[in-house]
Figure 1 (cartoon, helix red, strand yellow):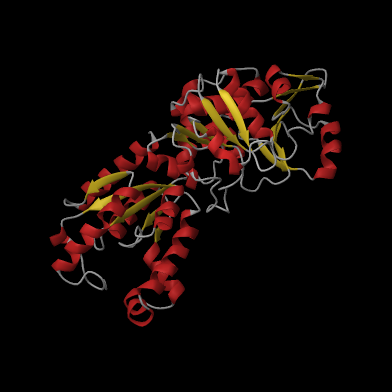
Figure 2: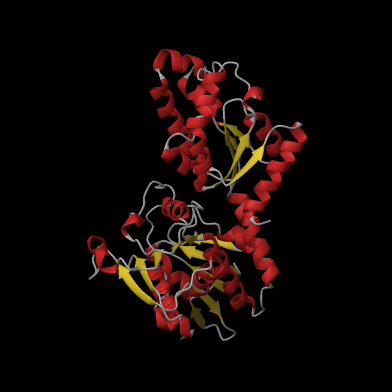
Length: 411
């Protein structure tokens, strides 16, 4: 191969698609077992490599020269084979992390930043923070500053998660409760799958500036490609690649009152976007083995909500879909988190008199609908990234939903 990625487990990596978007369709993912690393690097049947867990330090002895950043951090994620056959090693993760903070509007100078974890990514984050004039404090289970001693650093303005806590498939994990950090202004999570971890969602709800790891992934790849080819990547190419990858791994999620048109609008949006359409109520019925009215009548609402949460957790963990939800899907906080972790969530608003009520157990009568709208309103607002009025012709609503979706993606 010419260029590619090596690591122990790569099945969830976005790197091949990302480098294709940057212009290299031949970029290859190559899992390398621990015992095979020496033979692979000695043979050197490549022009350049990206390196991921667990080999970012193991590759250093094979390098004839290290870049300054790699020397300072003690970690290499990019290898380039030079004309004489020797290897040059550098660290482009630092560039990616710095760009992630810059794009999020988070500054380190004169600020204390807590960095969770003590591995290679933690060292990279600390290097960038200190170089920018900030104070980096590592929080780890085994270091001098443990999670049980956060009160000593309650004045921290920035939090960086450099651990795998919250990464797919264990998306329910959160490394700490940010309520313990009252001075917090910004949160950076190096995890990019899911796009919005629970930590990031907590930060958004609190009003902090924040960013997930997809931005870091994109810009470290941009810098790696520049090292591979010796040519700069135009900024517009990098931004286009980031937008395209984000679109590919994101969901368009529709929420709203029962009968507000989520399924009808969702199917049209899915057709326009050439994406699969998912109706979560249909999945619930398939799992329960009976229609939703019968689930309510025979098993009760609590049983229905339990199945609903299971379905939303599974559907929300994958991207590239248009998802229409049931009217009460937002009632549980965990449901809202599942919908938002890979989704742009759009609320459909329709006048109560125009809501469809047939076959809907909780929508019997105008008074019930008014109470439902009043009670559920805060949950809809907490979940939605955008709101679209569905009180006109269907094509107009679909157009507005797609415009809101692309706007939220930064298109």
